[in-house]
Image 1 (cartoon, one colour):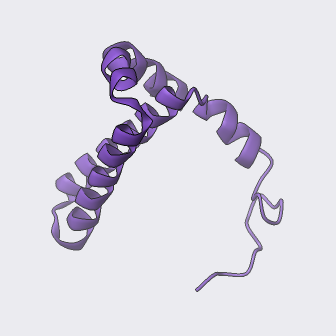
Image 2: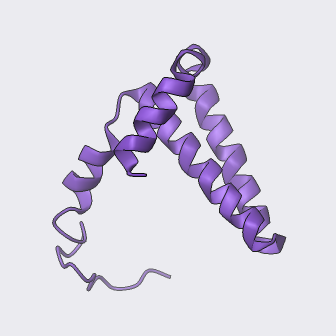
Image 3: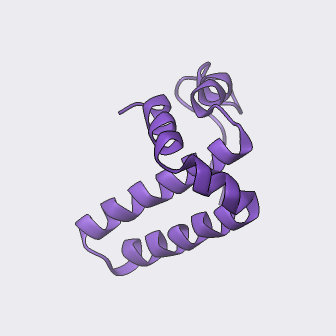
Length: 97
């Protein structure tokens, strides 16, 4: 599934609920899922980690839909030409601590 396909799927399945909930509450759901992912990374099984990664991505896509952001277009715009920092297809930026 592509990012565009996922974004369209989430839109079809949940758009009415998502728009009624609004961005602030949707963002809180995303943060809850990020917390669950952190727990899974620290102490979960591979299956639990995989499920939480999927949940985080789904809620990120949901928030993008509510905000009217085309993630595919933005990913191409920001990363399609390489690293946004150095422009390389292999990043040459100094590592951050």
